[in-house]
Image (cartoon, rainbow, N blue to C red; front, side, top):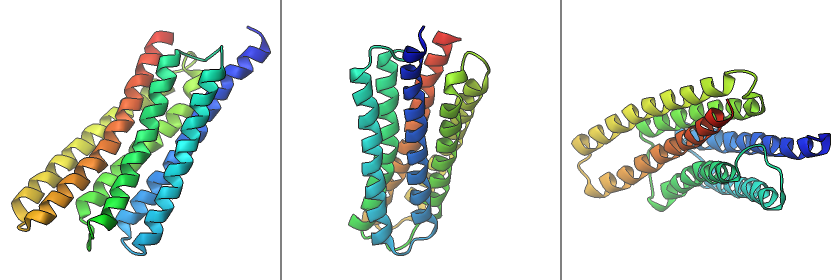
Length: 208
């Protein structure tokens, strides 16, 4: 393969690294909302900015996919990974917006715990993408995939406990409905991280 074609392939790896970095930025901002529930409107506005920037990263990858003849791995996998990455931030931005729409007065500790898990999963994905181009040379990518799956399982336990507590302790049915939706959406963002890892696991298996 010529150096020129190889360089075109490498562009996708770099775009995924850039996208993962932007998702990490959004994840940290979301965690900050959950940990420090103050100046909420400004923080939610910032989440919308970050979500838009992530959309732009997604469009950049999909545009290159449409225009490129050579890709580092299957086009369908690149498309699926990109869409799932975008949805990680979509879920977090929706939750942030719902805090305002639902007039949430006080943050629940389980939301912070789930947000921490989401950031941990994003961290592992970021490391995974940094080593994705080396998948034929070492096992780092596979190790990160396993770690994302482990973190998602931990998130499941926190989510189930959060729902258990909610349905036994919350007496206000409106508050129960609000927090049920919010917990589900935060957990969904963690599931999206696992979806990315699972698709990448398929990529690793194909090219191992």
